[in-house]
Amino acid sequence: MVTWEWLPFDRLTPRQVHDVLQLRARVFIVEQRCAYLDADGADPQCWHGLGNEGGVLVATARLVPPGLKFAEPAIGRVVTAPEVRRTGVGRALMLEALGQVRRLWPGQPVRVGAQRYLERFYRSLGFEPVGEEYDEDGIPHIEMLREVT
Image (cartoon, rainbow, N blue to C red; front, side, top):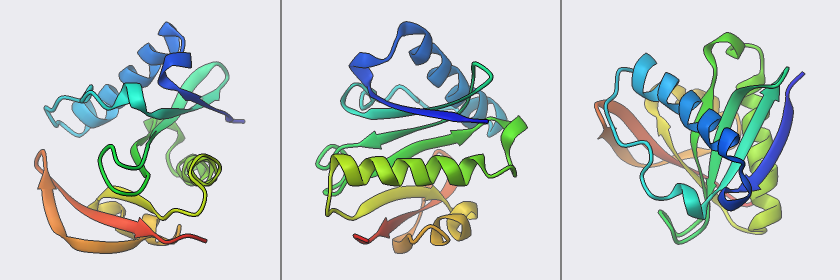
């Protein structure tokens, strides 16, 4: 069973920071073969979701406050470990993230910069595409917005 914890960056332990960066690098840089600067300077202003199973980080996402990257709050760096994919952990992570966004920034829409192949997944969570497809580090993306619910 996955347990969830949401913390601002300055409350993460050094081990938690390590585990988050390791999982993001494992998936975004190694698995997806995408050389980019993951530590983009936004993490210290964000909240971070940690999904642990048996003491191992298997899912993470960051909540970007309004005004930092977009006018509205955003959910980014959404990632699950390969061994828990297709088990519902990704959906659980996003539902947890949406709940936390509602607590932190009530009454605001939420934005994601989704990898295009995940558009259907994000639509199932209430997000709708806004704007045109764009390339981010060699991967097709689309911005999606979820109105206030």
